[in-house]
Image (tube, rainbow, N blue to C red; front, side, top):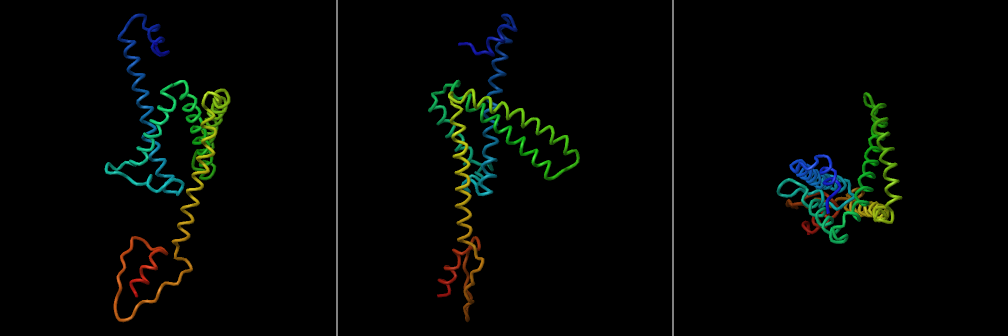
Length: 218
């Protein structure tokens, strides 16, 4: 079947086939660019969340090509899983995409409003107004898409988001507990042995290193 863009191009160019082909090629390039945007953005976002302790530390590690390879691989696997799960049906995938995109726009614009109010740099009222207007516009669209396409697949995003936030908080709590267990605060270091020097190689100073020092002294 002809796509909507193909039908519009045929009507506009009135039988001029090179124009129709050109529109199809440009449309394909735009879609490739849109897909590539996620692979550029998610690994960086994942590394920031991993650095702050909300995702596993492995997402903050760069690969041989100095890219966040783990984030790229995870995104690729999730994308393949969605295509297999929905059997490549774009009508089922579009509600997920649309709601995710407009919700992301809303959160980013609202975050910029908070940023301007906190730092109050020159010209911040106008910039806060622009970002606030954008957040309101995309927020309205997100609500409309979520309500009208809820039964068409948007419910997955609505259910998945709280689960992801809970997962982020759980990971952060785990890292906080590990940091507390490894902390050397309020811990008395072992006395220095007399008569000889002991050298213990360690990558970091934490509580797990103290038993190694005691063993070396023994």
